Image (cartoon, rainbow, N blue to C red; front, side):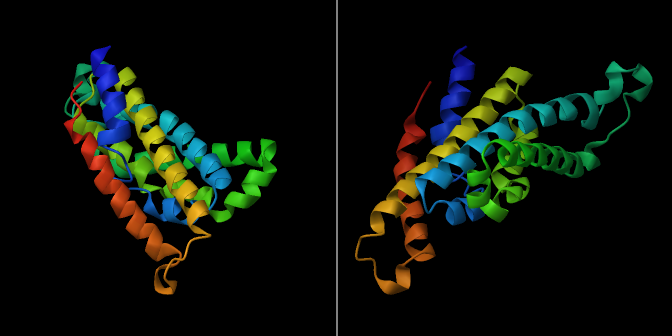
Amino acid sequence: MENILSIFIRSIFVDNMVFAFFFGMCSYIAVSKTVKTAMGLGIAVIFVMLITVPVNYLLLKYVLSPGALSWISPEYAHIDLDFLRYIVFIAVIASIVQLVEMIIERFAPALYNQLGIFLPLIAVNCAIMGASLFLPEREYANIGEAATFAFGSGIGWWLAIIMMAAIREKITYSNVPLPLKGVGITFIITGLMGIAFMSFLGIQI
C-alpha cells in the first residue's frame, strides 16, 4: 500500500508530466485558455491514460518483452517482439482516443465543439505515450502499480492545465507587454510553475 501511495504522489507532484518532463505541451498550451475546456480535455487525458497504460503494461509483459511469450509454451521463450513496442503502443492509444472522441461527441457536443482538433490530437499527446514508454524503465511489479502511475500522471497533467487555464483567465485583464501576450507569457508562467514544483523533490514516502 505504501508503494502504491508513493507512486501516486510522485507521479502527480515529483514526476509531473508537464513540469518535470514537459510532455504534452502542445495541447497544454493550446487548450489552457479557459478553465472549462481545460477541465474537459484534462478529464479526457486521465481517462485515456488510465486505460492505455495498463493495457500497454500487459502487452509489454506478456507479448512484447524478450521471452514474454513463454507463458504460451517454452518453445516461444526465445521470441523477442520488443521491436514492435512503439507501433503497438501507438495503436492502443489511437484506438482509445477514438473511443473517447465518440463518447464526448455523443454526450457532450458543446465540449466536443470547443475542443475541436485538439481532441483527436490526444492520440499524439506525448504525455500519454511517455507514460507508456516509462514502463520498461520503471519495472512496475504488477498492473496495479502501472494503473496507479497512469492515474497519477493523468491527474498531474490535468492539474497543470487547470492551473494554467485559471492563471490565463486572470491575466486577460492584466497589463502584459505586447510581445509576451499569448504563448510568450504562457511559457514564462510554465517555467515558474515548473520551478515551484521542484520543491516537491524532497517528498519522501
